[in-house]
Length: 359
Image (cartoon, rainbow, N blue to C red; front, top):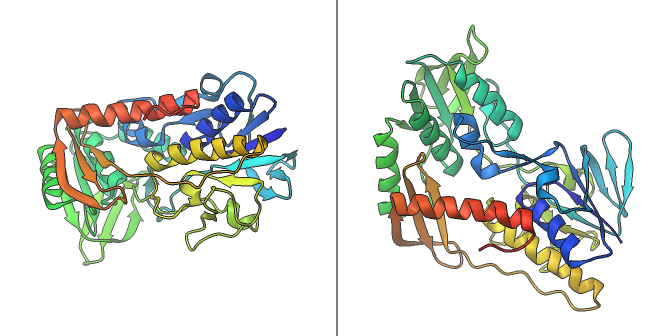
C-alpha cells in the first residue's frame, strides 16, 4: 500500500505518523520542499530570535517513513509529479501543503520559513532607533510586532492594519491593544498602498491609502490569506480561495484517493490554524484506516473552544468561543494565557510528532 503525503507541516507530519502507526503495511512517503518540519505558529519567534522553529524531519517522522525533499508540480491519477521530473505512484495520498502569503514588493513575508529567515537576518542588522513596520492586523501581525518589540526594545515598531484584532470581543480587543502599547508598538489603522525601496536592502518608505508616507528600515508582510496553487494546477475542484473542495470525509470531491487536510482544504467553517489542521489530519488518517478495514468513514466535525494571541513571551490573550467559532464575551489574559498558549503550541508539536491527539 503506497501512501504519499504532500507537505510536512503540522497536518502533514501528523497524518504521516498516524497512518504509519495505524496501517502497518502502508509504505509512507512524505514530500516536502525543505528537510525540516517548521512550526508555523512560532515563526514570529524565529524572526525575533527567541526560538528556533525548525526541526529536521528525521527527528519528527516515525521510523520507516521515507522523507523526500522536493516540490510537487501535480497530483492526481494515482501519482505525484515532482519539479525535477520524478513521478511517485500512490494508492492513496494526503494533500497537506498549508497556506502561503503574497507579499507586495518591498516587503518581507513572515508567514513562510524562507521569509522568516530573511526577516531574522534583516532584523539583526538593524541599529537602535530604526523603524520596523509590520503590515497586517490579524494574529500573525500582532504576534510578530509584539515579539519584535519585546526582543528589540531599541527599535521603533509599528503595526498597520485596517483593523487590529478583528474577531475579538471588546474587552479582549482592548487588552490586546493595551499589551501592544505596553511594548510601545505604534498602531496605525489604515491600509498600505505602496512600499518603495531605499538605498539599503530593506530600507524604504511606506505609503498609506490615506496618503501618509513614513520611513521604514524593515517592512514585514504579515497577512496569511492564500494557499499554494497545487490543487488548482492539478485540476482538482477548488473553492474561490484555491482550497481543495472535500466531502464530509475529507476526501477530494474530484479524486477519492486524495484526502486534503489543513489550510489547503476547503473544510466548511474551518479557518487557517494548526488548531483546525491537526484534528482534520487525525480524522483523515482514521478514515483512511477505516476504509482499508472495510468500514464506513465518519463525517468530520470539530468544535471550537478559544482563540489565543501571544504578546511577547510574558503576556497573551485567550478569547473563548462558541463551538461554531463565534466569540463569547469571556476572555482571560496575562501569565495564565501565556501558559495556555505555550501548552497548546507544545501540544501541537507533540501531536504532529507522535501521530496522536494531545488535545
